Length: 228
Image (cartoon, rainbow, N blue to C red; front, side, top):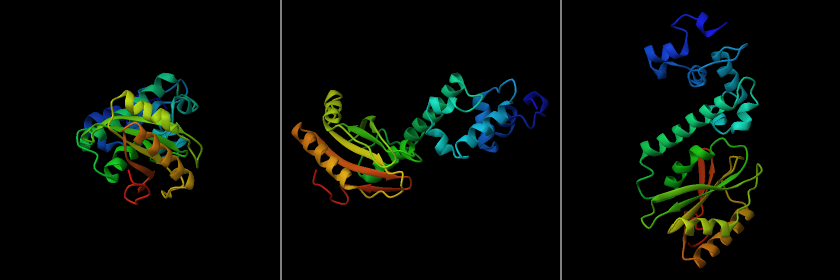
């Protein structure tokens, strides 16, 4: 059935305008973003198919890249682009709404809240660095490594170079554990010690290394794994 064959009360765009976005299901909201279907699939069915490809999870869907999205039948480059843009706007909105970009990064909870929108739901490890100014406000957030489900390697020299390039005064290392267990491995500890040595040699502070596991996190500073 084509969308135009549905009553106005069943069409996602018309429902959004009359009842508000909160009245729509995840699939209906995706249909509004996608705007159109294909010659054989209406936009609502296409949106539902896209959501099913991510196990019905918006978190999982938000972690797909353009290539992953384009593997879903009916999703081409232009539709993948609007989906990626929608999720990125959501992340930026969350940052601005929380005020996290203007207030100092005080502790591990602040770091977790800055990064969980980027790391939650990932099936592989990623490592990010936060660059902070002299008042410990976020200057820049950069992904510096992507690995397999249980490991990711970092280059301390590249991270320090990035911090110096942008005039940062201190840095924070953040990575995720898809296993759901945030405690550090020996490799995590060894890599952090190397980064600490490289940072201190260049006059930079390593404020913390936080491991994120969806709703949990581990702070090297809070647990006194090292002295920064």
